Image 1 (cartoon, one colour):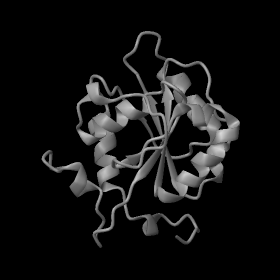
Image 2: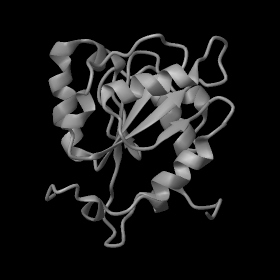
Image 3: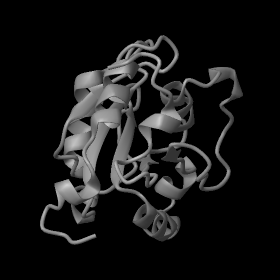
Image 4: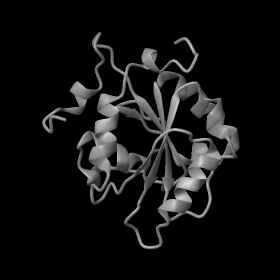
Length: 173
């Protein structure tokens, strides 16, 4: 991977069409900080998301929408604009905010991200199990947005990720 590749270059497909992923996760899971780390932005600029944010490479969502069942329908609607789903699970959290098998209903590829792996009390193995219980059946990445651990692997995967049409899973886009 070319280290000088900008995120704006990375989010264009062969036919110069922008694509993006959507971040799902509970309050404080580290979604916005992860997005800033992936985009190479200053992490000090990451502030709590108050609404769905479409301004970057990824679609950022407030954790409250995940934690309050009546707002999950808003996330489902926003997910239509995403070609890839990233589910972020805080390694320090003992439980998930999503019901079992929740992410099996999405036609998009669903990746897992275990965040805060370097935090005190982190249990990345438990976090991975929680992601699996939620229905994350694809690859799981282990990251620390603050130290950068695992960020380059995730970013490289996202940059090299194929066109949505090539991942059809039997669903026409």
